[in-house]
Length: 278
Image (tube, rainbow, N blue to C red; front, side, top):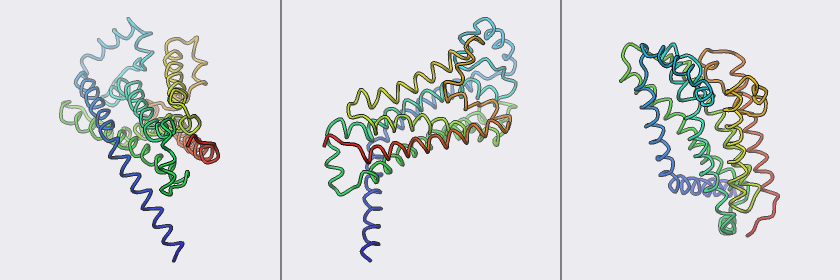
């Protein structure tokens, strides 16, 4: 009976902290959803099958710029257009920035401000704390991806005439998007679990993510830099291949999720054993 009572108490404490953190960070989440809404609306409004040839000419006139932002693939359908102009850069960068901010607010600020002692004195174990904060982060990422999927689908259906999206293919792209953001988020999570100072807890995870994005952009600009694809996990997220249903693309997504799970686990283990400035 005592064990059962303690178990229910642990669940209640974690639920209370989970709800508190969601309430504290929902405005930031809403801000990023508004940004995604704005960019998605603009990109979808630009779709016109009759203008594809014009966009192709424009891309050929500025190949480095289009390639750097992952927009060199020729769009033959609405789904191709969306994955080309939204999932190649915009929906990579903004959710990643959300992960950076949330990881600091969920973990880094408590360590940096020396207020971790108050949380752990509730009593709340380190593992319970880290698991709860992880659930908040994952909840935010899932909300962002689901929102992007639902909003883009509905907005395209309402505004684009005589065009449709293969929903199964589009769902596959969004599962891949969640995979890459789980991995990028795990880097930020691990960073905040390792370092005490804000500049390090933010800088390490955010810095790695930015480096990966820059490497991806550089590798797309010229064939001379294609070897750089092996230095960034962003290569494992291929929206075009996912929308085409290629088996290898799904294997890469599986690798993203497994890698993220490992990094989340490493972060929790290291945080559990490390000295904290209480």
